[in-house]
Every structure is written in C-alpha cells, then in structure tokens.
Length: 513
Image (cartoon, rainbow, N blue to C red; front, side, top):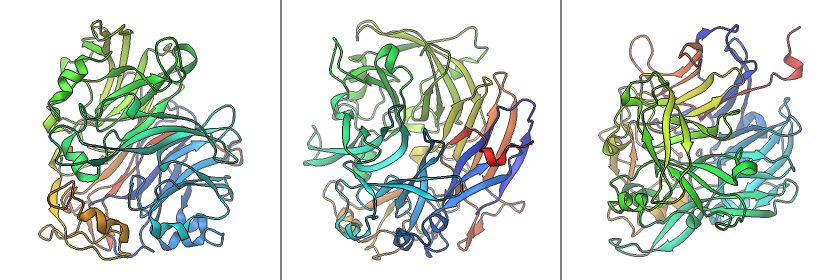
C-alpha cells in the first residue's frame, strides 16, 4: 500500500463524505512477484486519512474465489454504491481492466465489512486458459471484459461498459482486422441476462475515425471509459466518453421518431488528423461549434476540445446543458501537448443536423499544472465544487504520443502482466500470459511492439476538491519521487496511478457524534 500524502484539508469548505479512489502500480514499473503486486480500492475519510482498503488478497482469501489470487488479480475501475448501500467493485485477472484478449474481468458486491454478497464475470471470448478460473458460484454476463464503469439502475438492473468486435478491412489497411469497439450493456442483477445493448458500431463509422496507432497496437477503436444517464428522461440521451476518439458522444437510449436506440444524436469534439478522413467525417455529424464564454473569466487558451477525456458527467441542476469531464490533454499529435485539466462545457444550443451545428463553450476549468496523459476523474459535488483525480501525472512531463515503441521478444508464460522492462535499454516484454503469444505475431502489425513511458518516468496521482472559484480545499497525493528525487527501485517503486475518485456518503458505523 503506497503512502497517501495529505496536503490540504479544509472541512469547512469541502463537500461531505469520504473520498473513494484506487491505487495501482504505473504500467512502466516491472513486477515479478504476483504476491507483491498490489492494487486496491481505497477510501479516505474527511481528513484525507485511509479509512477503508480492499485488495484481491483480502477480498478473496478464504472464499471459493481464492484461486483468483494466484493469477495476478487486481482491483481497478468500477467503484459505485449500489441501491442497497453495498459497494460494487471491478476485479480483473492479469492486473488491468482492458486486457481484452489476455485476461478476463468481473464484478463483486461487498458490504462495508468486506463480505462478498454477489459475484459476476464477463465471459464472452475469454481465452481458453481462463475457463477453469471462472469463479463459482457467480453470475455470468455475455459481454467482453466489463470495464471502467458499471452502475445500478433504479429498477435493480446493472448497466456498464463492455467490448464488442467487428472484422473489417478499411481502405489502406493491409488485411481484415478484428476491431474492438465498445458496447453498453444492461443486464439482470440476479441472472446476468442482457436486456439491452448499445454498440458504438451502430453510432460511429470505424473507417473514418480509427486511430492507426491504437488499432495497430491492440485493435481498440473507441475506448469508452464513462457514461451518464441523466438526460435519458428529458432528451433520450445516453452520453458516453470515447478516449481514443477524443469525443463526448450522445446516442439514443431508446427508439424515437428520429432513430433507433444506439444511433448517434451528437458529438462534442473535433476531427483529428489521424485518420485524415476524420476531419471530413466530423463535419458530416451533428456537432457543436465552440465559442468563447465571456462570463467564465477564462483565457482563450482554455477554449478547446479535449484530445482525450475521462469520467464525463452531466452537472446536476443544469437541465442537461453542462458536461463535466477530466481532460487528459497531453497529446502533441493533436496539437494539445498541454497540461491536463478539469473542464465544464456548456451547451447553449443543440445541433439540428450536420448543416446546423449547435453551440458550446467552456464554462469552467481548473489546471493542475501537470500532465496525466491517461486516467483521470471528475465528479460534480453537491456544494458546487468539483472532485478531480489526476490519475497518472508523469514526471518528467510526457505526452500520450511520446510513449516509447518497444520491440518484443518471446514472452515467458505465466509471467507478470506489466508492459515494459525496467531496463530502458532492453526492449523486452516480460509479462504476458500464454494467450498473448498469438498477438505478438498478429499479422495486423508488421513488427510486434508495446507502448509505455520509459521506466525512468515516475508517476503519481493527485486527488483534489476545487471550488467554483478555483480554490483547492482538499488535496492528497499518492506516489511520485521522494525528497532525493528518486522513484524507488524494482522492489519498492514509488510510481503509482489512480483510477477516478468519488465522494460517497460516510458509512453509518463511521459517523462521528
């Protein structure tokens, strides 16, 4: 468990509740002992002190699911409070929630004492080696790798992000390629039966938008990382965040007079230059022109769309017109090699079609000063402040597209799930399970490679609560260089990441008199 360093706490200005986040090693840090590989969901009390921790070893030890701990089990991603007050966590094998072809993932419901109440696993297209590891008893859900966000609906069903696939060959591609998009799935809490699916393949054209680098790397196209259903009743909008596309996207939640469920309503974002067709394609979509908000008090450099974003949510009380997001920025190829930020977009006019774009502006932003090229979180709080998680701040600063491209050698079966060798001079993949062998020779790429920061880059996470006026009233950091400027070593790395942060009600047993 890394140290959580409390920098600022002003309880007179903070929103009530505990802060729920997660910790896990940065992906450029090598781990060779799965029993020392630590990922956990963590809650901090009002003073920023650790009040509740749950990792795989603690959660599954002494239960029918103990064998998950023998296979690089991690807890990252989904963290939500269920209708009954229990907690919903995402567990994953081989340590990452988006190991599409290499591992598998599921959900677990626990009470505040850590007792398991329910167990789910996503089972579609799981690798053969993982079949004997499927948890029993459990509810099986027909989707590929539940990831990032799963919530409970008022009717008791669960809804979340999974993957789905299409095989196709776009112009300029050498051959047929399996493309991984995302789907939203609504499934039964008790049986796992899928009631509804919303696929991004029904909303956006792959060939006009697929980033060539990411498709070549792992076949991933959209990389949805969050959703918000606040506008379903008023506007029939399911709003999602697509990190790889750099778009906030609204699709129809249900059939209406203008289209089928899952079809596109609008996008917030711009066309990027990879692929070159994305610029023209974007101009064919219902979208928004971005203007300067004179009432926001911001400099014009804040008038920009996100090159990639996380954790979008509709600002409560805004009648669906304000969207909060964590803007990763730090993307040089998209002209935004700038620090990450928290941002609120205000929609003043909806588009009617591609020929009549809507109007949007940046209504608020907070810049931390560092670059978190991936990972991040944002939550609008009931005191009108924003809770932010700069989940992967790089040191020295790096952009998303500055990841090193590493040639790889034959993997070692049953080795660790990390992406890169700690020795920067050795471009060797130490990590994958047996199922990765086929991917390393996949014909969709000429030379097998992986992408990550150099091992010398020391990551940290920064969790902040920021008022409307930009005052930081809560600040906690995890990881990062020590006073001597070092980042630990292979046995005790100080390079840590965090996935999202939420302010949740204080449990009744911890309520102060």
